[in-house]
Image: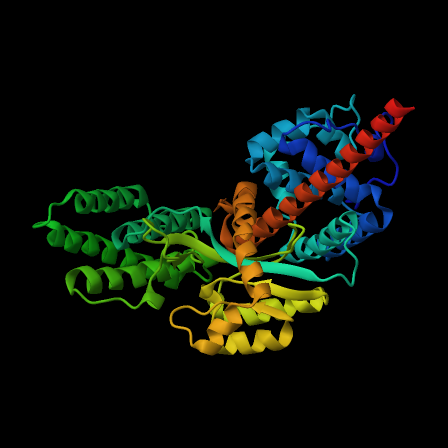
Length: 470
């Protein structure tokens, strides 16, 4: 049994409109809570947010049956607070159980003994979907523009850039990845066979020890004896794979994880043999960079002193009011491949978008020509040599001004990294997308809270000056 929001407040619950927050605090918590309070106090915005939550969270579940679950408003608040503060679930549990203002925002009375466990928070925040977060972000941006007195027809001047959101993986080597895949395969098959009361993996712990010993011998080997120990390691790996294939044939079905670990093990055995023993070059598209987070990419942005980053590039679009209008997780393709569709979608959502600045990594003649037709001012500089016509284009005062303002997006990217996008700890491709969406949404709500507090500070100063004058 779930509700979108409590239809009737419990006894002693402070109305969200009356929650008192420290207006002078420089901590992030009062600012993000003020942003959430602003969303709730605007009736139209509140109804839009609640409608999205009602439609997108557990749409196929009968909410009138079962035990009482966490309200969707509480899930939304806790998810935003977690990423706005870039905290783990242990700290979120402490805040949800002991932070008075946050509990008031969750519509819990000061005398209530209701407490949240860590696992409850994990399970419920994970119910948020990237589609729901994207729709709510559009509502938050519209609210932010309203607070900034930005009309629907006023021009939006934006800047776009991409940064790598790192996945929670260790630096990959072929031998290490193979050891991880085989260890997970053995442990998984052992547990699966044990639950079905099947024989065959009674010595699973011995196989893991033997595999680990062979792997450590490879790590400690000197240059002359390294290849011999790699051959010994591959011999153990092939024995485990042969045994695992025999087990899989006898089982009627295998979990997706077990199938992936087996596939990855076979592929990595082949790659270790080809790359280390036969000295072949492996095509980049064939490589695996993480067994546990297979969506991880090897990204080289050309940064000084950084060989590569392990994660997925995320492109963000920021307007002149410092709100993130959109984002795109680049699971497939790079900057040049996605920018046209990205700006086209932004133009559909925000028809008043008139200009956008980008860096040279997005440039192609095709992208430049297409965006010239889509935007009034397409600030896409060309890398390398430029002819006279191109130099004239990039020396236009509007182009130069936009280029000078473009580095400000680095501040937005750094802010997102401080909101949880710097290192994504959630598992899987879906969890990665959800975390990036929550980081963008929490950054916008935090920004909204700061805008509202600044307006309130000016209003208080005006009233104080007027009282003093009279």
